Length: 220
Image 1 (cartoon, rainbow, N blue to C red):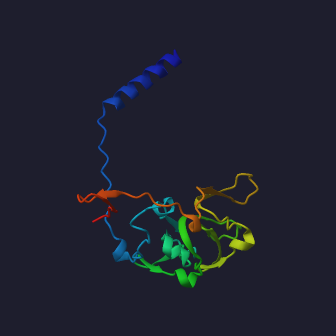
Image 2: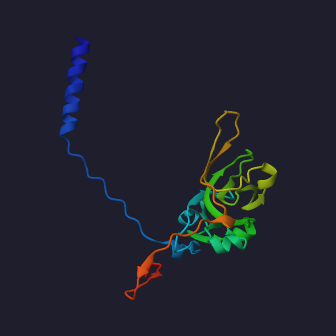
Image 3: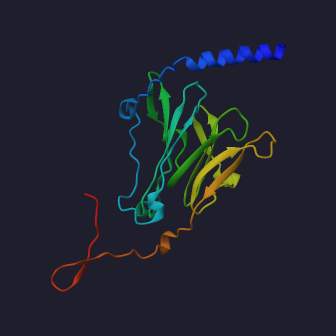
């Protein structure tokens, strides 16, 4: 009898709640504020996108680099074939969040100066010192920056043995062996040799005079 009564009470309760009309959740609204808060570095990329490496790059990460309770922003920079052959571009830009929700570019003073062709970023405290560190993936090599405190970083890529080389697209941190320290997973992509890029396909346009001319279609 007790079980029957409980079932009746639950049935009545569910029936009543089912008849109550649900409130329609308000739609989220977003406002573009990047420029007015100081996030103003342009992403470097090629317009043509002739090779697969040119069609990738970009991304962002969040980090509280000085543990002040406010999230700072990392943007991943790109490059182009010609610029990479001449040394590449800074792989990331670090914006510190100041008071009043304003961001300031502190990349140089933070020591995040390694150049290349940035692809992705992952943040974690890999050495358990209470400070978040930064790992950057890219074409041609990756970078690991150890946080020294107060948003100052040391490039420990070679010491840690995580430069990788080749074409790395993304990364993630996880303690897969449960030893209390995060481990690193890096996703890799196809082999691209800048010194042996394949020949481009060629579109030939009929010129109405008995011959064809090479004609590239460009964006307006």
